[in-house]
Image (cartoon, rainbow, N blue to C red; front, side, top):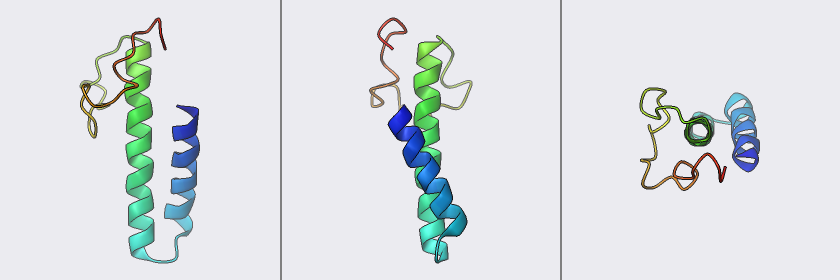
Length: 74
């Protein structure tokens, strides 16, 4: 999750300061995907409903490896 947070922070910076619209748009999407994946992992860790909190927007529970960890493992 920390690595994804670092990537998201870098992507937000690129989205804010990108040289053109394509760079800003792609960086914004990358940041959003990372943050939703972090949200999915946090929902799993705290036994919260992923769908209710929007954490399964990009990755289903079957695809997101962080989301299928049990709270004990996380």
